[in-house]
Image (cartoon, rainbow, N blue to C red; front, side):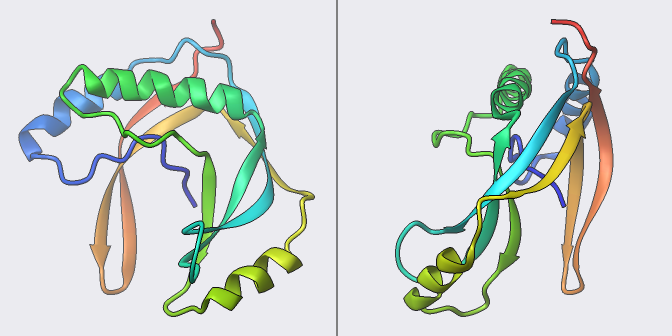
Length: 148
């Protein structure tokens, strides 16, 4: 699983090295714990397409990390997402669903802590899509330095 901080989409190969170098610089932020709890579905109305779990604790620290990395990439010409950053893990996708699936999922969901993860780095991945599923190749890693 991964949590997307900045979605890049298609990038020209000539720009990848500069982006990897920018992401590789240490982030002056202490490592932190991220706690996941609370389920939801996308989109907010109609038939759901994805089931997700949200971040409960560590969200402010994660937003700070996301802002730092988005800023680094913006300096290289990557436009910032216009929608607010909503930290979540996508757990499942529906191939086909009905609007009633939304209420069934949300009624059975609970708000207990499901996972706690120590965040001490962020990774830039190249995703390769195929009929067998996605594979991810690490291009760069930003280590949280422990300093503020």
